[in-house]
Length: 171
Image (cartoon, rainbow, N blue to C red; front, side, top):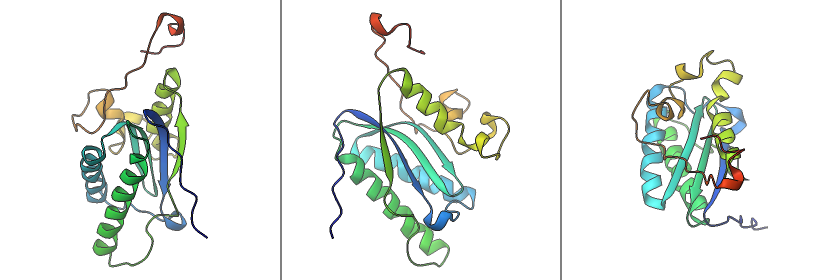
């Protein structure tokens, strides 16, 4: 039976995440993370994706993305995860699936909740007990958002702060 096509809305934000097959580690070394983030930069340009937040955990990835054309989200994730799987299988002399199934995605309302979702994504290493201070984790967008590093991976989050929404705008 064929898979049901995903429905993505143009100009919408999505929290996208994918986990290593059987919860296995997919980022065992710093060079794995660097490779994935370099591929993210290339994929963003290739598919016109805006990346507002990300976090590479040892066995999964979270991203907060926005696409002018919703259908480009699937193309972006396919290109990115297929490419990383080829790298991973070659480097570690393995075969088979690196990722557990298809990526998951949840639509995110643009507005104050967008900032909340970015914060949730970037705080994953603290909740998982990998670090005590979020600024100590090298593989999330937090350090770039706070201007502690300049990797030029994430895009600026822009929120409509119209007069009616001023009470809920966090910028």
